[in-house]
Image (cartoon, rainbow, N blue to C red; front, top):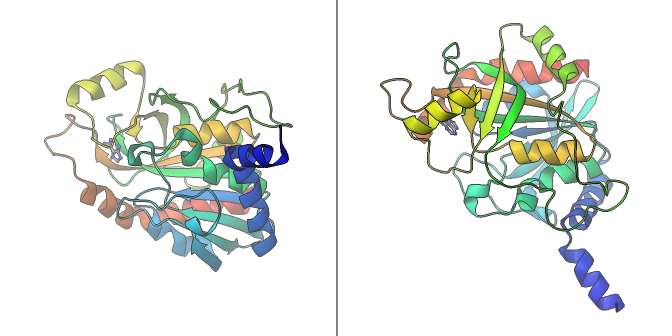
Amino acid sequence: MSDRSSRRRRQADPYFVARGAGGQLGDMWGQHDVAVVLGSGWGEAVAALGEVTEEMPAATLPGFMAPTVEGHGGSIASVLAGERRVLLFRGRVHLYEGHSPHDVVHGVRVAEAAGCKSIILTNAAGGINSSYHPGLPVLLTDHINLTGLSPLSGPAPPPPRSVRFVDLTEAYSHRLRQIAKEVDPEVGEGVYAGLQGPHYETPAEIRMLMAMGADLVGMSTVLECIAARHLGMEVLGVSLVTNVAAGLSDDLLDHEEVLAAGQDAGSRVGALLRGVIDRL
Ligand code: HPA
């Protein structure tokens, strides 16, 4: 293969692009300890997290897309939280925006390349479990990936992570969940079903998810978790229940309600994130 075609192939390889972007980030802002991905409605949590020392549009770095949904910010920040350096992703890209699984998990791979050994994936979710209420943070014990997709299909991952058959027996870290429960003993725990969306579910689909053992439903997180585990990162997943899932209450679902529930719970979920980061 010529030098030029091998360079072109590497430039199109998502692992190579992520490694390059992570290296660039490290050169600009130094190494980070932990990454946090903020889901819809989690923006209010930033104030409790620490001091934002740097921030830039995510699309400044190679491989990032400009997000299309209002309320999904699309920036990367460096936050000093006590002793820890946090790489904060405000907003994420979703499959429903037409992006590929590799695009969706790009931030996770960049965070790992920038030194992060653990990642906190947050999201907004509909509550299926009848003991949940809007405003409740719920720790993910596991997920059901109903997207039909994997971030590990496609080009072979490079060494030292060339094995793509990743064990997901403990996709979400038991250790990090214990820490989170010490910080906020009232949080819920449950299984998250990840669908493509962007439409909300039908009541029949929610009954199906309930029968499958799902407690929460949303449109993100599952692919990011898989990519993080592939890289050996420890994952904490936290959903903020923003609504009762379709058909389980008399209410209809609406995106504004999802964002508003996040605003109301901002200080609680912010304190939860900061408490976990302090104890890592
Ligand atoms: N379903 C799917 N995704 C969601 C929901 C929901 O009810 N609420 C917030 N994100």
